[in-house]
Length: 225
Length: 367
Image (cartoon, rainbow over the protein chains, first blue to last red):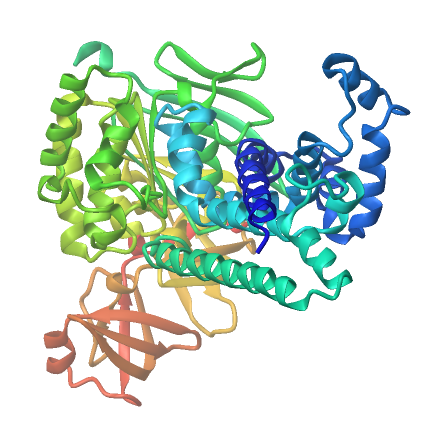
């Protein structure tokens, strides 16, 4: 069992999950409420990682992080080294890769909140921000939890993007899925199986818990039609 | 009271999905009933007043305080209008307790006053014992009361009620109305109450505004609006069971009456004189309860209209007997059960209908 790879994966997934909660909620809120006519373009961009092969996404991220791109040069200018093949680069790539898995359930939940509740809140003198905090967020807990869990699980299992952007540096960018791949390549099926089983069990338990919790939330929601 | 007694003045013109709402009226302190068929624009009107919809043109003000004025480019946000609005679906926050729902609108007040006001409103609307319950766990009537308390705790300048009591039984409804009246006896704010029930409008309102297809077709005191409908819609809305097309056949100017022949029937009715000329099409509206039934041809009556007819069907609804009588056209007639029993009314039986001239209301048909 390669514990360093497991810890790295969990650390990466947790970090991405937290960042996506902070970034995803405002994006989801905007997508759920905006009436902008070009909104569909933003929706398409956010959803791209779902359909793109991870290698394609990884390739462009690698290029963007490299010295040939302005972003890569700017970062290197500040920190003295490039983003590619670092843990930070991996986090950024994973955030982009998992963005739709966080945003879509959240946006769906926000959009499902009864409009008349928002109107009622406004008639009671509440600002848009207060309405969002005290009415929309609590009533969307299920969607937010789902978004967080999905982005965590999705990051935990990613392979292609990690390989393209992070490479395979033990303790820095070598995640569980890459370690498993290595084991299989080396015909060490026992080592691969141990980690694969761990990942499988973990994913199953996480998703089961999420669905169990969500179901209870639906049940305490009789006003929702 | 004094300064609180300010009227809600509304003048809006709003187009929405091929529908046009034009309303112009003033609602003084007290109950003003907005009466009309569903889809007629009542909720749209409330949403314009609340600021949830923006009128294309017009002005909305409470006393001297302008909420909307298209000419002056004033358009206060809903949150700044100081209007209480109880939605048709109530829109209680399901994840909050009854007390938290009521408190929601006064979050900026000091904690002590907030507590006091919440307690007072919960008390006024008899939901104090439910304060700690989730809004999603209480009954229909309790939810109505909570919604009213929540809207009124903010001390609004006007109150909008969108059929808030439609789902309740009569007894619960009248108790809630009594509580609301008691509350408003002190505050004296304009209350706009949407309903499609003429009985409710007649019973509750100090004023009635009738809205149909986006236009105001009548307004005034309930008695005025209900007793003398001058527009076909009003007649339907206020519950005339009998509405017939007819043509004027004779004018008796000196009597203040005229005769008209009902279309499709060989019978004439004497009705009050209107400006309609000879041969003009008119529409006659008669309440089912205003028609008398006689077992034989009546004599020596002041009523001018006696029509022979045959009973088609009899059914009983509560304490009313409802007859369908064929007299060339079908009349609906309402009687008390004892009257029906005494006359031994049965389907197929021939009877006489007696209708006073002034029970015939002339309605101007839409052109």
